[in-house]
Length: 92
Figure 1 (cartoon, helix red, strand yellow):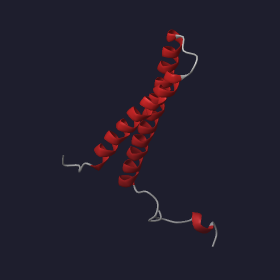
Figure 2 (spheres, rainbow, N blue to C red):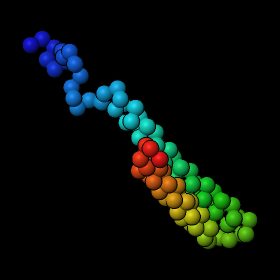
Figure 3 (tube, helix red, strand yellow):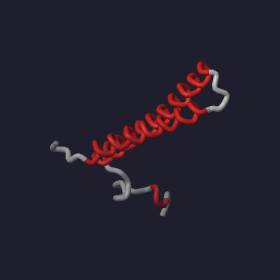
Figure 4 (cartoon, rainbow, N blue to C red):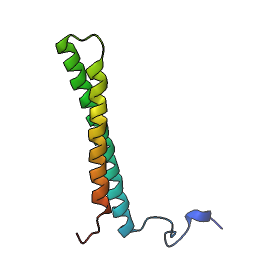
């Protein structure tokens, strides 16, 4: 057998077909969007918290800790909304 497993005429059934590949791509994009939204929310919360600490002259990073926590909650809420969107049937 020359070429071994690389010489086949039709793709193996475990590989994504053309109709399935789009679904996999959409899922990957949605997961990337949810992860990016979570990271951005935490970083924005950190930045705002650090700015509040600086402007108030607080030496303890109280708002620099609370900001990312609020950002994490916001990101989790956003992730939940994306998850609900993905669960909806296509007819709705």
